Amino acid sequence: MSAVQPVRGTHDLIGEEQRRHAHVIETARRITGTYGFEEWSTPIFEDTGVFARSLGDTSDVVSKEMYTFTDRGGESLTLRPEGTAAICRALVTNGLTQSLPQKVFYAGPMFRYERPQKGRYRQFHQIGAELIGPAESLADAEAIAMGRDVLEALGLVDEVRLELNTLGDVASRTAWRDALVEYFSDFRDRLSEDSLVRLEKNPLRILDSKAPADQELVKDAPTLERYLNDESRRFWDELRKSLDAFGVAYQENPRIVRGLDYYSHTAFEFVTARLGAQGTVLAGGRYDGLVAEMGGPRTPAIGWAGGIERLAMMLDDTPVVVAPVVVIPAGDEAQIAAIGVLNRLRAAGVRAEMGYRGNMRKRMERANKVGASHVVILGEAEITNGTVQLRNLGTGGQIEIVQADLVGAIRSDRSGEAE
Image (cartoon, rainbow, N blue to C red; front, side):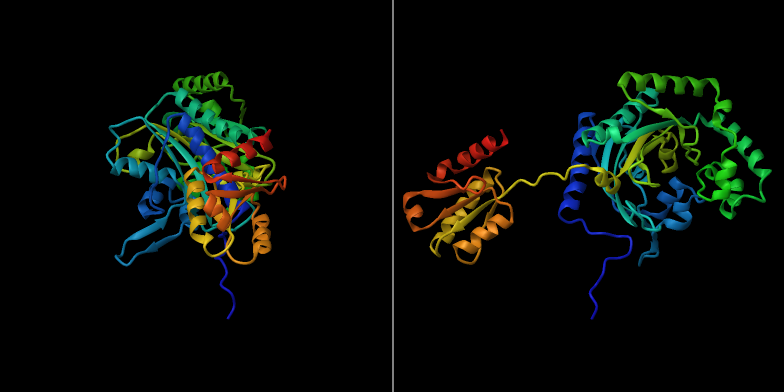
């Protein structure tokens, strides 16, 4: 019988990879916490309508990539392909639209059926942040600055650049949409099949097309700049001024778009050259109409999400694993006493393991193999005296000390090594 294999597009997080993954989450949780954000956790599957509404039926995610199934009760459910829609749904169903602003951080798995490639899986993971309530451009600048600070805390800020665009307000984007329809209609015979559908339903989606023929046409398509009204220009100017105040460097990129009507004003991406074609590591924008799509009142919001796998791949250093202390009982009678020593160490926050099985040489080999910093040995004599033998595996030195001084001696050794 052949061995069971993981499902294509999934991967196990073990050892160094898991430590990198956890480090990204813990760092993002810490930095967003300094901005006053609190963590929410939503289910990994939702009513299909949550994502069909939020992503639009012309998007590749909805039409080709969602994991959608009918459960035994006949309901259509979907594994979440992204986090923002679920957060907005949770805001509405938990009655929090009257308690704004809400500052939300989240982290967890997402699911999309797409071709697996470097840094991209069918089950992937994201960190994300949503600032729900403020309508001011300053909120957008602060959300972007927070994303920059997460990347800086991960040691990646010099590896990315921030690309920024404005989507304008509804009136500006409507005028732009009309201009795009007029432009692309002249090239119907050159548009891809998918973009012909987009032309009728959502022409802004053509700007995101990966088809080579579409991309050639997009190069000369009208940009939003000439259709911005005074209000949109004011918001755009204030956003850039606020980013300057936060010390956030950016490059303007008029080709960053979001296809749905509830997106407005700000769109941004932190991109890198280190991951090949999959260069976006953290991206977001303003979405003032999404909460209303979930059945709530029209509510302004700004947010972003980052791919944990891609960020973890970029880390230069693997997060350090704290070396354990191995407790080795010498003889059967010392087993119970060794449990007391383990309890003392763990209660003090020291990572401690029992040295099971084998003679003393085998147990010492095992301690070295797991990277222990110290070994604690106790036998009948130590039990009688209330002491232990403490061996520093780094220096080879060994001392006998009373059990009450054990934790302090280990910490003293470690602080001396750090110096």
